[in-house]
Length: 242
Image (tube, rainbow, N blue to C red; front, side, top):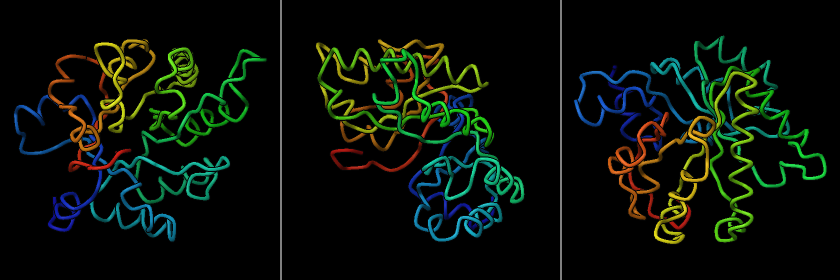
């Protein structure tokens, strides 16, 4: 790892790490971290101004994997799935994961199926080459309405099935409200994990988001083994939303 890349990792907001290496990273202190990537939200301003130049700079710094945080009207940073996949290939980058918020309205009760909008979202994720579709938010209206929340967890499971049909996995990314919101003897995060199928819904742990609300990474890894396939590693985020 060259000096510029090392410095960037230390100062950037988010690093994404494959869960297969979590035990080595957290417990064995390896000499080299494998499968480390960058969440493009960390360089969102640069990506907004110059996606091509920004991706080239990241590749020049030694990055191989990135995770997107911009999918609007069937485009990634202004590019169709096909064009963005080519752009990634031209710069030598891979994008195995991406953040796209799923909301309750993405399920159509009248059809008992996902809306066309959400189906296109999953199709485009597969086209661009993702392995993971990650939803990084939970609407406030759902957090304490137990009927709506349970229904939304069922929607999570159904999205896991939809993603599987496209050769991908579906997951959820935490902030800190999940640990502040109490439900029964536990919290909202416990509820999410208890009411989603482990074979259909994985978790992307965000260490910095949860820390200020009492979420401890190692404790959760022990409490819910096998549930975490991705991780965001960053400093503590001291805010209400994470």
